[in-house]
Amino acid sequence: MQRRAEALATTFESVALDYIESQKAGWKNAKHASQWTNTLRTYAFPIIGALPPNEITTEHVLKVLKPIWTKIPETASRVRNRIELVLDAAKAVGLREGENPARWRGHLDKLFPKRSKVSKVVHHPALPWQEAPDFMVELRKHRSASHRALEMTVLSCCRTSEVLNATWDEIDLNQGVWTIPEERMKAGKPHRVPITETLRELLLDLDRIDDSPFLFPGQKSGQALSNMSMLMTLRRMGYEHVTVHGFRSTFRDWAAENTAHPRDVCEQALAHSLESSVESAYRRGDMFEKRRVLMTDWSEFLAPECVSALAERGSN
Image (cartoon, helix red, strand yellow):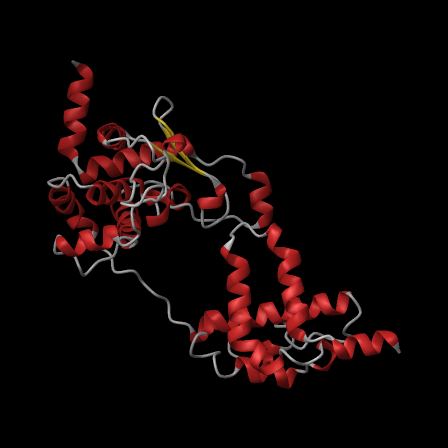
């Protein structure tokens, strides 16, 4: 009777908040806890927050998800998953019995279309690869931090945040490698970027600010350049029809249509995960030297005159 009374007195909201508190130390992203809280508070708590976990049914879950499943499918999928995990936690401590009404496989998948069927794939507008060399000529006419950051982004094929938050202690010019730590990578794994001669020249030309660890410091002390800086640079250059992220697609199209580099090497250059868990257990390397050749070819395609000048300088 005491356990039943406790189950009836405990609400879904309180269990959810306890779950978030118990799990957040293991989440790599500090924002993850606030994202959990915000989505549940916005979509779930108004409908099931005050209910005891043992009273929540499939009908309640449907009431939460139906208004958002086709409008914001990615968010809806996350809300469903978070409800499921909270209810599993409630069951683990004896506050709930029976099947989980938020379970997807074999349950809600019979009532909702798959997220992939309702979500539109967002393609970042990209510059055609044939136009990339001319773009780089225009880009190198400018010397501001945002222009140099954009140049590094194109040369390295990294994401905006990976470049803007790069610090000098990640750069090893002697070994020719930029190592991005796992906490700054989307996949949660460290990523080594080959420093080609063109990229090396760019890095050597950057001014170091004594009180800032960043390659591209922002106006405020201790902060990196704004994540809008490169997009605004594109607009000022007259390239408002493309995005910074789109240059990763430009690179991928160039590699596929204009080179014989293996697909796995190209995808690894973009820090994309290819392997299943089984394949990952056997693949230990990151094809770094093969990627160095790939990225050197990319640099030469983008700015052959720069590569030639560097090669001539090195031979003298």
